[in-house]
Length: 148
Image (cartoon, one colour):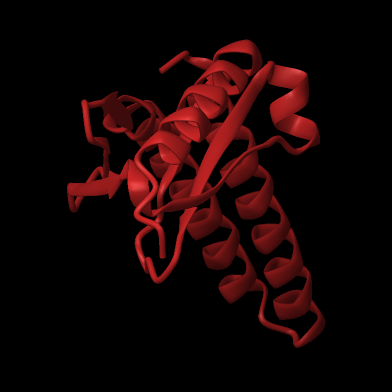
């Protein structure tokens, strides 16, 4: 996966920690708890630093491979997950990208199946690669159709 995925995670989590730190700090100051406000802001900084560090590990944890009859996805920093999606069970394969992903030049390929509760997505691909993967998966899902 390209390093843009790590930067995406860093920016999103840092923005969330900043918003929570400032919002919680202001509320605690309004309630007359300056010591708790400082502790809350310090906690937000610690969480931001931790997520900044873990963003690289998160980026390296994602992987996928296209086997002859199914798609294998693996991800997870603390708990590793392996998701196997048979091509014949794929119903929708799409490419999504939000504004920040667009700015970083990455996209997410999302695979939806009939009754899957698994998170079947390939994140952080360059947009051109994501479109090619979507097209390959869509073609394979049609050739492996189970006729349900």
